[in-house]
Image (tube, rainbow, N blue to C red; front, top):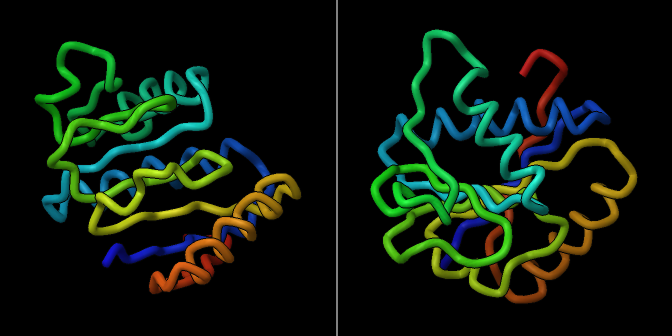
Amino acid sequence: MTRIDFYILPDTTLDARLAFACRLTETIHRKGYRLHLHAEDEAMARELDERLWTYRPDSFLPHALVDDELGSDVPVTIGWHSPPEPGIDAMLNLHPSIPEWFSRFERVAEIINQHQSVLTAKRECWQTYKKRGYPVTPHHLDAQS
């Protein structure tokens, strides 16, 4: 059964949410998992793509947008409208809702910040996962995380 982790940030900004997404992506990649980042829309997907190239000068995360020709050859994919190819272990869901294909992954991570629209959407996601019987684990992060 898919394991669900909610990372709860103290910040209110999209910038903080995307910065943490990059850090979490690096951690997941280092553990050897193939990861899919599910963005809210194309603009967010392209922003994540750019950030993963530049967020740390001493880091390299091989990644590509799902629609790119390299999409099936890299350990980290980014998309917003359709599921990735089979063989991905984990998903980081930055979309307000849960994609219907989430259960194909071993792990799903949700990142919450303190922006009201994100809180509202992710509360609904939490309740949906729980109603369906999925194990959900919260991780409350402090300002230094």
